[in-house]
View 1 (cartoon, one colour):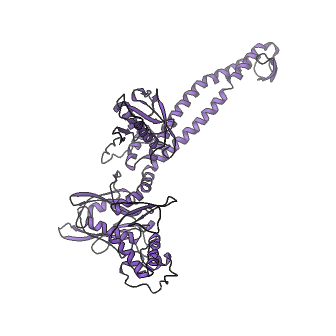
View 2 (cartoon, helix red, strand yellow):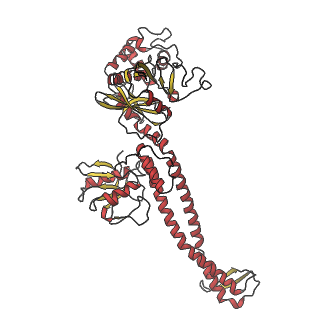
View 3 (cartoon, helix red, strand yellow):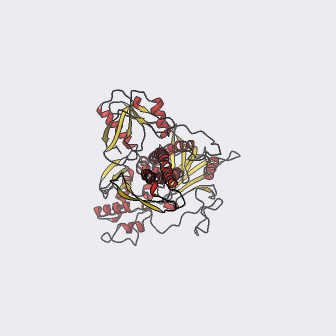
Length: 552
């Protein structure tokens, strides 16, 4: 089921029960198209997400922690000015459309009470949030749409708010009769129901049609479907093809594995969590991904170039051979020759033709080859040093890339700070208005009760392994694969503890979606960090390897 008008109807009822006569305590706008209202209700704070994302538009209570941008967007500032402290009188739905209205009461500058509205239109890419004054004029909206982009209505501050264009569809909640044009039951299709009734999505239409046929009556079937909204059972269904559906109660027309949730908000959280999180990471981490990808590409190119130079340096022995042979056969050479053929006594006296510089003497030609030999020999040491440095940097960058892909949105700031510290990003000149609280390592507990800590980024990996971990505890890391440092906090782990810690090491690695991932483990005392090494890089000894499939 999509978030259609019927689901919106149920959602508004749920929100109204929870938030009627409560107050808006705090407002955040962590992303361009998402607003968080912290609402004080029943002596408890709730975070209500208003999202007008083109793909993930929704309204739901959330437990996610969001990081505010350094500078609040203008729309957020307007909401803070006009809405913080307002009382929520009621929450309503317009007809059976995907439009939710928060009716608010506030005190103005002279102490008089006045009403305002927050309108959320959940219309795909046309979704929007409006703040309206008592006279229905737009104080501001999260997406400004001028008249030349929308000929029906102007969505700008100061304009009068108008509802989106409405058709002649019937509100199913007010339907005591059937639309005249509705086909007979035998000819009726789900598309017909969507055409004649307002706010009915495809999955809802299929379920209603099934109930109409089951009742052998169109109106009774519709009424039977609507009656089920009196007893919600929020349901997530995953069909045999792996496609996921969310519905306010189990749909008979949707087969597959079903899970139920205590509220519609919990259901939406489960459905959208991964999709929305990936989008948040894409928004917040786009700069980091661009920088890291560019540096990875640059270092791979450098490594290929160094390998080419190393291949060329393998000719050093050939230059030495030619220098020695020319020295031996100097008596056969005269100045002005362009080449000479001599017997190679290192290869059964096989003839070898050696190119000469006609402008040089025989002795100078021999020295010329020795000079080439010495130059290449000297370069080999330098090339190996550069290759080692480049491989280390490439390994570091790939580990950062993995951490970005696995990160929660709020973890990206610490990765950004790390990249600034390492010189990949320039430090911002503008000081932050607040200092972000540093995140702690991820914490897990094995079935036996042993704690496991997992680093969130390379600097935290260093802190965890080299400074915080007990030297007799156990350290885990995917073998030759970018990933997090994992500490199993015991000096006497069971086999089950080792497998659980290894599974976490695999889960928080580049091979998180793979099977049979190799994970090395050893005691922390056998993990050493070389001087000058990049964050997260260590050498380790006396390790054992276990192969596991990460839990997902």
